[in-house]
Structures are given as structure tokens and as C-alpha cells.
Image (cartoon, rainbow, N blue to C red; front, top):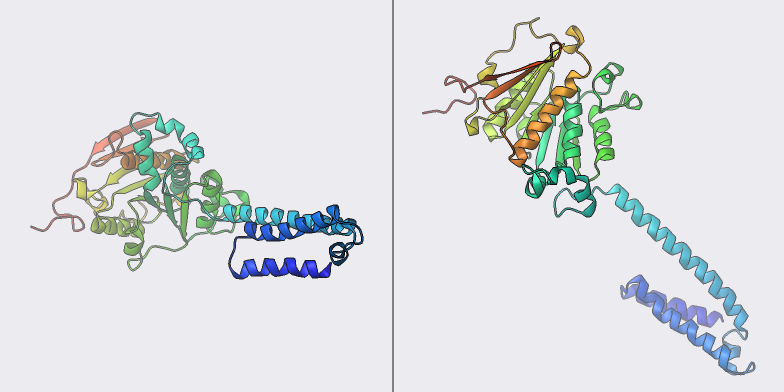
Length: 346
């Protein structure tokens, strides 16, 4: 009986050495034990082959039961490991749509202006969002929900209790976490079919170019003018479209800046930063909670339109929303010939 087990082990190790798939390694082992069972069922009790292979079929029954338990355990363990690997590995952002994705984006696909081709462009698009605060929260959520394949998010701040009044991507349990990782977790929970790239850093002139170059479109929802002017300059240099939003108290604004397509850049419209005290921060002036959601959602909507080629965007126009009096207005904007950022040298 021991000799038979050694033979089975030898067959198994030989198959492993020859790199035979696990499923096929069971074939010679199974044939060996089937032959032993045939001996015990057909030969007399005192036959030499029966005596040499255990003498009693019941002994092999016990061995077979233990082997079945071991094999079942191995299959269950392999299944759980494979399932864990699939859960940890993000699905590919590009490639054909799965059936689940078709169901998820069905309301987009039936829109004449989006359809299958537009949804495919969204899936293949890369969008970088500067800031995971008020504007970034709703922008990020709707970009992910819409199926933008790759979303980058830049922020060096951590979640604070005072953020939760308006920054809806973060939760109370996220207090103290870096905003980019809190946002990444929320976006993965919302749509596992998008790739989220967190960048926990403040943009600098040394790093901004290399980062923005990898994306097709930039959404700027930051809260300081140094970063706004830096992002604009880099986008102009790289011919990247820029959707920028801003807000304070009850009012917000949004526009698409893209000099490569004839629209002004941010510096054309705002050549100089406001004097101290004229543009107070949200902490200084206050802000109504839903306003960042309104403006941030508009930014995501303009991004989806731009990527899918739907409708008319805000290039060369600024949309201003007054939440206190429920009014919107648009103003036309043109490039400044003397703009030091986007002017074309003769």
C-alpha cells in the first residue's frame, strides 16, 4: 500500500517537473487508483496483486475519502485566492465594454448625442482633477459615474471635520485621511470600472508639466491663485483644454479655457490676481453647502460634453450662477492679444 502511494507521488512530482497543468496531473494518479480498485474487485482475496496493494478495498476507501477531502479543500482554497486577486486588481479602463458596463451606461448610450461612440471616448479618456475639495468632490463623483476611464486627482490636504459640510466625497470616518485616498476609495466604491490615480502633492512648476502631459483634459477646482495660474500656463504650453471653476458664498463661475481652439486662457480673463481681501477664502467668507455640488457637477458635465463631442461647450464663454437669487448669466470672452501666457508670437 505504501508502494502505491509512493508511485502516485512520483507521478505527481514528475508532472510538476514537466510543468504539466494541475488538472492533467490528476489523470495518471486517478488511473493508478482505478487499476488498484479493479484488482480488488475482480481478483481472488489471496491473489498476490491484491496482497501487494493493501489486501482490502476498505483500506483504499479510507484513503480515497481522505484524498477527496484534500482535493476539495485545495479547489476551495484556489477559488477563494482567485476571487481575492480579482477583487484587488482594478479592471482594465480600456478595451471593449462588458455586459455589466453596457447596463451601467445604458442611459448614456441611448442619448443621441452620446451613444456608443461617445461612451467609448469617455472610457478611453484621461481626466486630471486638481483639488479633492468642494468642486472636486462632485466633479470626481460624476466623472466616475459617467464612465471616464482614467481619473487623476491631485491634493496635498487631509480630510477635516469642517470639510464635510460641502465636500460630499468624504465621510466622517475619513477625517484625518489624505483627501486623495478618501476620494479614491469613494470612486472605487461607486464605479469599479474606472482607474483612479491619487497624487498626494501640491503642484509645483517642476512637477506640473510631467503630470498634466499624461491627461487629455484638466479640471481645476483648487482654492489658491498660485495653482490656478500654474495649471493654466502648463495647459497652454501643452495644448490641453482646461475647465476651471470658482465660487464664494452664494455665487460660482465656470468656463473652458483652450487657446489651441481659439478660446482665451485663464490669464486672458484674469490677468492679475485680486488684491488682498477682494477674494476671501471659503473659511473667511463662508459658502452655502450645495453650491460646490452645483458648480462641480457643471464642470463634470462640461467635461463629458467635451470628451464625447456633444452640444456646445463653454469655450469663449463664462457661466455665472447666483444661487441666492436663482439666476444664471453668460458673458462672452475673447483672447487678449497682449496675454503673456497664450499670445502667439508673430
